[in-house]
Structures are given as structure tokens and as C-alpha cells.
Image (cartoon, rainbow, N blue to C red; front, side, top):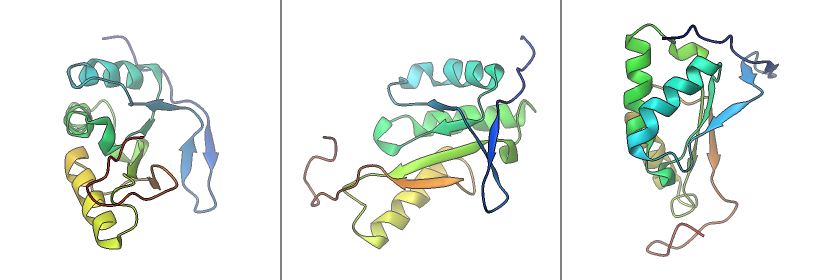
Length: 131
């Protein structure tokens, strides 16, 4: 495998954490392409990954990130993972927590660096959650 590119530039947050300035979006990455895509992104220097349950690939991303960590390619503290609560769950604190817990399980991580509301509105249960 080619050597890893150095991580890109970061921003220093008020908390003291560093956030990469450039991230790798995972919307549209098909489940079968996750491993190849993430390995290429890590090799190219990406460390921020934009994720969401509605992309239907968080489990596969978790598998690949777990494998990369087990192989010694990256360590969790060097990654900046962001995910989002879907609008169907955004208005109920219990559902927000449940969706977060599911995302953590799917990604095989104990924490996210950033958790967002995917869209700035809520939808009623049973309504379509994808605009």
C-alpha cells in the first residue's frame, strides 16, 4: 500500500480540540464501496468524516474504521467523526438519544466529535424522513 499522506490543516476549537478543515462526505457511498473509499480517503490524508444514518452505510463505515484501527493505520483520537440525527427523530429527546446510541454502535466508537440535526425541521412519526 502507498504511504499515508499527512493529515490536512485543522482548526483549533474553543474546547482545545482540533477539527480538520476538509472532510470526506459519505452520502452516496454505496455499502459495497465503503471499504475502498474510506481506505483511499485515509491514505489521502482525510481525517474528518461526515456521516448520517440516512446514508445507509454507517455499519459498513464502522466495520472499515474498526479494521483500519486494528491494522494500526489510524487511531480513533486522530479521526473527527460527525453524524446527524434524522428529522423524524429530532424533536423527541428520547429518540435523539436512541438514534445517537445506534449510530455509536454502528460506527463501533464510544463517541462522536460532532452530532448535528440533519435538517432544520422535524417531521411527524411515519412521515417520509427524506425530502
